[in-house]
Image (cartoon, rainbow, N blue to C red; front, side, top):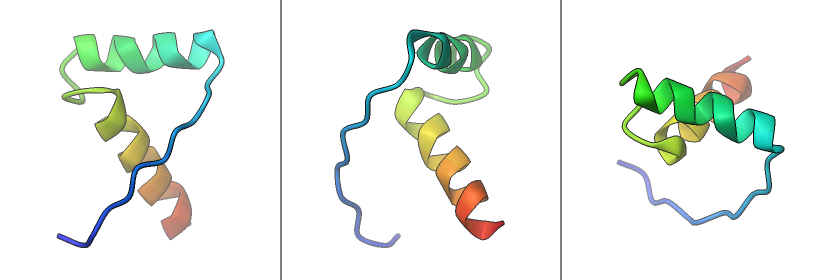
Length: 45
């Protein structure tokens, strides 16, 4: 795996709630994994 770095972001509560719902549905292990995947997908586009 490539080296990683920590980045702090502020998200609207509504977005954090959506991420939490995805984690609760076991689609992601945690918010960080969800954000990483969404970022990777967006960069690929």
